[in-house]
Structure formats: C-alpha cells, structure tokens
Length: 217
View (cartoon, rainbow, N blue to C red):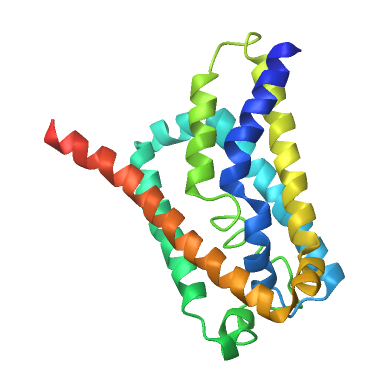
C-alpha cells in the first residue's frame, strides 16, 4: 500500500506540471468557443478519458511499443516537439478578429468528438513531454509481477487524478472566462500559446541534444 501511495505521488508530481490543465484551459476554450456549455463539458469528459488512457498506456507499454517499432525516446521528443511548436505558433499568430474564425471553423458543433483525440488530447493536453515522462516512469518501475502491482495501482490512481483535473479545468473553462473577461482571456491565451511554443522548443531540444550527442561518440 505504501509503495502504491509513493507511486501515485510520483506520477502526479511529475506529470501534473507538464499536462498543466489549468494553463491549457484557455486554449481549449478558444478552440471550442462555438460549443454550448453542456457540449463543451461532454468534450472535456472525453478528453479526460483519452488522457487517462494515453498516460496509463505510456506508463505500462510505452517502452515495449517504442522497442517494437525501433523508435527511440529522443526521436519521439523531436517529432512531438515539432507538433507542439506548430500548434502553439498557429494560436500565437491568430489574429484577434479570427478568434471566431479560422480556428473555430475546424470545430463542427454537430460532431463534438471529432477533434477530441487530435489535437485536443494529443498534443495539447497529453503531449510528447507527458508521454516521455510517463514512459520513463514506467521503465523505472518495471518489475515482474506481482512485485510491480503496487506501481501499476499507483499509476492508475495518479493518472485518474490528472484526468479528473483535466475535466474540471476544461469543462468549466467558460466560468474562468467570465471571471477574467474578454481582455483577460485574450492575454492568457497569447501567453499560453507562447509558452506552448517554448515548451515545444524545449521538448525538441531535449530530443535533438541526445541525438546530436550520440553522433559525436
């Protein structure tokens, strides 16, 4: 039981700052502004479920999947970093008058789950940084059954807690918008988009530096 609690704390403390559902809520709201509040909460619930599945799958099987396809973790970081940079840049250069335009025309209110996985779950919520950390945590905790059962339980609980935080922050992002006002949300959206670009660059550099170091050997 104590081992499961330790793993839960480790998973939450390592992944929550990277997933950062509170920081991602303005971007989620900007991309779903044409949705009604109930539809947005339904979408937030689906994103939370997707995030839980993605995190726990990365923890349990990530290293095996990468090994099967012959893909190294730095390559995942480089590819994922490029996607994050692209997403953040498109939001950053989006003009004010386009806030209800280009980004939202892609979201069909009649099909609210069309973009639930990509891009709203991957890479905006659970990106390459979160996946790489989850894979690393899973690799460090890899032990034969039943010794690793507490680690699995802890990972399940920790991932569930993060998924709940995603639902709360995304599902009630409209209330945050009303609290901050249009100007405040615009400022937060721009800052979040800029930070998203910076995070993408950092993820890209983390992977590229390892690949470049391997060439120097």
